[in-house]
Amino acid sequence: MIKIYVPRDSSAKAVGADEVAKAIAVEAVTQNISIQIIRNSSRGMAWLETFVEVETSKGRVGYGPIEAGDVKRLFAAKFYEGGKHQLAHGLVDELPYLKNQERLTFARAGITDPVSLGDYISHGGFEGLKKALVMTGAAIVAEVTESGLRGRGGAAFPTGIKWKTVHDTKADQKYVCCNADEGDSGTFADRMVMEGDPFMLIEGMTIAGLASGATKGFIYIRSEYPDAIATMKEAIGIATAEKWLGNNIQSTDHSFTLEVRRGAGAYICGEETAMLESLEGKRGMVRAKPPIPALVGLFGEPTIINNVLSFAAVPFILAKGSTAYKNYGMGRSRGTLPFQLAGNIKQGGLVEKAFGITLRTLINDFGGGTFTGRKLRAVQVGGPLGSYLPESQLDLPMDYETFAANAAMVGHGGLVVFDDSVDMAAQARFAMEFCAIESCGKCTPCRIGSTRGAETIDKIVAGIDRDANLILLEDLCQTMTDGSLCAMGGLTPMPVMSAVKHFPEDFDKPARLQAAE
Image 1 (tube, rainbow, N blue to C red):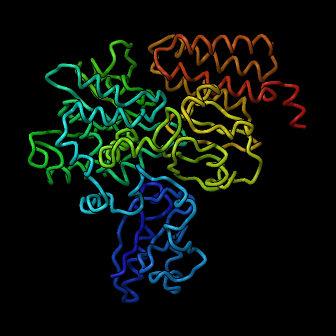
Image 2 (image 1 turned 180 degrees about the vertical axis):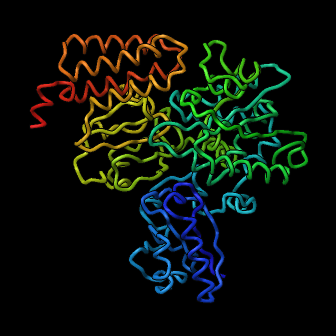
Image 3 (image 1 turned 90 degrees about the horizontal axis):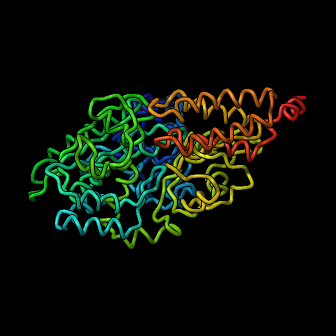
């Protein structure tokens, strides 16, 4: 029987993947061709969605972007046999976009049926958990520590240290919480993991439970991800039924249960302590630290909190060993990161590469440059609180320390590209406005500073006391950085001041008027 793969990823569904799958099924019946449609996950080549693959004797052949109206012509070209067509891309494994990546976390992306436990296991799934089940918690923590894995969020805190703190803390109950409130602009890797390889996240969190002594876990998923929520719930049900979750995992003395919790629709709940408040049924408000969540977390108990990509990296580390993982990367940035290309870019999508790759390579070699064909002017890295980097800094290697030394951050690996038509003063104002809207309101520097910041930028752009207001803006940003309780207010100055530093002409009214003429 011919196997045809049509992605079930929400980005593919948004452009008609469900309709394509139905059209293929109908046409196959009409032509009396025996096929099996498998709803796989996305390969991460967003510009080619819906990307349809056909299994042939030589390997999978890909076609895209496919719409339902293309299906009859595809059948006429015998695409089900790997036939030639203007939308054909040849053998999928040979595509440079995929072949030039180092896929550790996304090794199964696009290959397996996301909710097929058999597929997951046959492609190396649960190998890490099997090893962890016969190790001590301290040994698991040591392996993760040795790998050099750091949190795949803004802080990049060493994962092993966080896990060791929870492991060493005495308590009757401990928790593992996954922060899947992926709200940064231009980021979608968490969603792709949950929709495309949910058992990997389950495996990583279960290993964290074994490492720390936690028996209960929660996945806090943003409410805007209904497909991810549904897929994770389905996968948890399957894993529990097959004894990979629950009591006496795989006939051992270990137990770990998981629940999915829907987020409250607030960006601030991406901050770990605000997420804990929301999980406890309260309004998402930032907690003062100390105490840290590793000591006093969910319901006052020791809690491991990591995001999706952090937990998703753990199964590889346990299965292949810490050395295999840390052999990728540079400096203190070990392993790989799924970089997400978005904005004004020709080939938007996901690229998993070892740390050290440059922005220029990601944008030009993988992304194909700007979508408009105009000159690139800026790229924002690390979400709406990340710096705007000019073209002159595109050769910076993607490394936590290198970016920090250049007043920037890698963050969650999201890149948003802008061409030379962008107004950087407007982008700076957006950062302040975004903070004002999304602030939990607990601390004054964030709550009031963001509002005053937007007003000050308006005055600068209007040419009102420009020099004095630029000084005021810088002083305001410093106050927000030093005085805010969390990264919401503490990092908002980063995009603002980077825009002022690298694109001063956009904050100069005479220069703006001259450019308009």
